[in-house]
Amino acid sequence: MAITVHYISSSGLKTLPMTINDRLDQQLAFLTEADKLKSTLRATQLCDGSRRENSGEHSWHIALYAMTLAEHANREINTDRVIKMLLIHDLVEIDAGDVPIHASYDHAKQHAIETAAANRIFGLLPADQNKAFLALWHEFEAAETDDAVFAKSIDRVQPVIANLETNGGSWPDFNVTAKQLEDRVGVKVNRGAPAVWSFLQKRIRKWFDSRPR
Image (tube, rainbow, N blue to C red; front, side, top):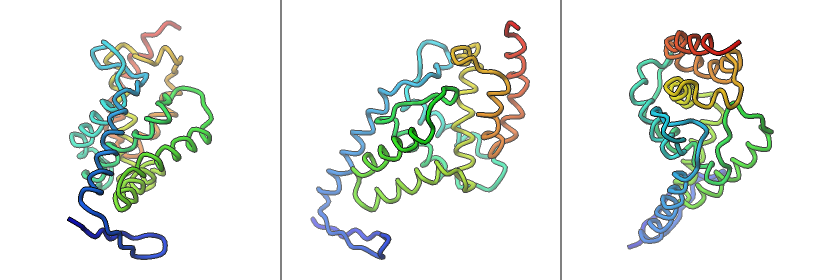
């Protein structure tokens, strides 16, 4: 059975004839590729400290965070769009790997690697979905819209909570200071969910105060 897909390109409305089987081939190829995210390990441990989480688990968890904490956004958001961003934003790590926020690295080079990964991975999809998914990914990366600002906040706050639950988790490995945590994480969380960051301050201060001087 043939279907017609309409999508907007830079030159205007385009029509893409394809069969349902062709479309499913592309969609399932993308979904199979996305399974590789489960093999990408992050620095953050599970809350029980038993092992490091993978990026697939992280993506699921922050989507759940967004559903649960949406009421604490400091501006009006579309929770469905936020969840979509959070579910796809780390797919580039299939190619690029996870770079911990407290690590030292070349930001411009990493961004180029991740952009190439986004083009490859979302390019597995039919053209209309490729365009839509890429647009969401770029929106998240830019963090300028209300939805993207809140999505970035939630993405940053989940590892903080995991680290607090595991006696600092990866913080000692990267010699994280309270100021560094505020500069690299707190600023971003405060942009979209200041009440959440304010609530965590007591626990964060307590952990850093307990560290040897």
